[in-house]
Length: 387
Image (tube, rainbow, N blue to C red; front, side):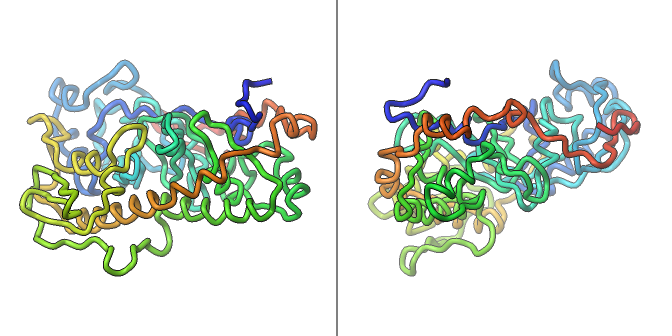
C-alpha cells in the first residue's frame, strides 16, 4: 500500500490515477501574451537562412532544425524539417503558461521539446486539467485547474477525462459508486474534482466524507474555486465599491510595478489601478507572486536580436482588461481560503475503506492513457500513421 497520512486519507494519485509529466517547451519564443507576436516570430524565423535560422530557433538536444516529428493531435502545422520549412504559421492556441497567466502558443510539434501528445488528444471544451503546484503550506493551493492546455513548469498534470467529449472520467474505477452508496446521492466527475480542489492537502492527500451536509458545503466551495480558476462562462466580479478600476491611464509601455498597501493601489509607472486588495497582491503559487510574474511576462526586456524580442510596441487594452480580471479572481480566491479548514480536518472514508471496497488499488491500465485515436495523425514529412 502507498504511504498515507495520520488519518489514512487517500492519495490524489490513487483517486485520479492517470497523470502526465508537465510539458517542456524548451524555448520561450513560441509563446507570447498576445496572438500576433508568435506569427511575426515565425515569419522572422523562416526569413532567416542557414546559421541565422538555427541561432534564432535556439536548438536543444531535443529539438533542432533537423528534427523529424509529426503534427500535434488536432493541430495543422507543417511536418517538414524546419531547416527547409516554408509554410504558414500554425494558428496560435490559448494555453496556461504560468499560474493564472493565459498566453498564446504556436501549436507546432517541431518547436516544443516535449509536447506530451497524449494531453493534446484529450484537450477539448469538456476537459479540465489539474496541475500540481508544489505548494507546501496550507496558504498555497496544491492544485490549479484549467480548461486550457497547461504548459507551465509545475508538477504532474491530471486530466479529468481520459477521452475527448467528457467521457471516461480519470477517477479510480468504482469510486463514483462507492461515494454514491456512502452519500446517498451520485456525484458527477466535476463534483469529485470540486471536492478535491476544496480539500486537497499540501501532501496531496484528499480527505473524503460520508456526511452529506459537509459534502454539499465542499461542493459549493470547490465549484466556485473551479469556476474562478477556469474563468469560463460569466466573468467574476467583486461587489460594487470593491471592483478594481483604472484611476489614472496606464502608460503605453509601463516598466515598473509598485503596490501601495495603505491606499490599496497598484502603480504601473504613473498609471494607477485601485482598489486592489492586499490579498490579491500577496497571492502566491508555490512561493511565486502571481501579479508580479504576470506583469513581468509582458514587460521584462528580451535579448535584442532574438525572436522573443518581437513583441507588441505598446501595452494593450486587452492586457488592462485581463489585469483587472486577474485582480478580481485572486481577491475572490483569497476570500475562500478560510473555508477550507473545516473541510480538510478528517477523512471518514479512508484509503483502507477504499481498499476493502475494492476501489483501490485501481487497475494498472487506469494509470496509462486511453487509446483514443480513431483517425490518422500526420507524421514527419507528411506521412500518416494510425496509432
